Image 1 (cartoon, rainbow, N blue to C red):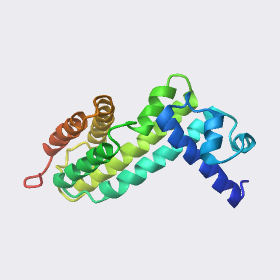
Image 2: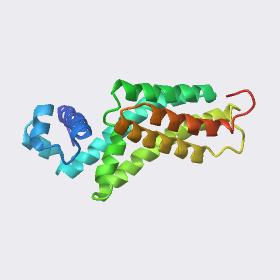
Image 3: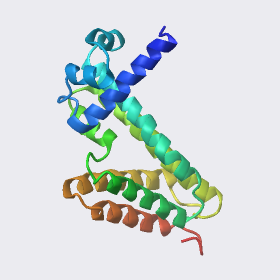
Length: 201
């Protein structure tokens, strides 16, 4: 069982690793880098983690919590298509504030790890499912309020919106331009708007 002090140290290691792996990739992050960033010894790192693979899984969980924490408050307040467009604008502005560098941290980890580390791939899937669930809950709330028609498939629409978000972030990262992300999100929201009840767009 980890003590309170030990948990603080473990959390500091994970937070430092999350930043480094986002900037440099998992393969590009060395133990020495992590020691310096987290201000810990190598023995402390290996006390809490068996190796880089187990640390990478903890980082996936960290970014999953961070992304859900960012999106959930915005999506919880959805009541019409206009609110959904405001959420999309917040995403674009967040990416722009970072100069479109880095892209999606969960997506970057998926790209690097999914084909070589099954445990990491499963953890990424859990993260994506959580994220999709937050989007779905927002759309379901819209439907419950009467802003979407009864036959709107919120699970399918949430997946489409998450896919647009991921693809848009990747292209915007490569081009250093908001347009791919903005177009991907707005086009998908236009599709969702086709399920809106009269006067809610």
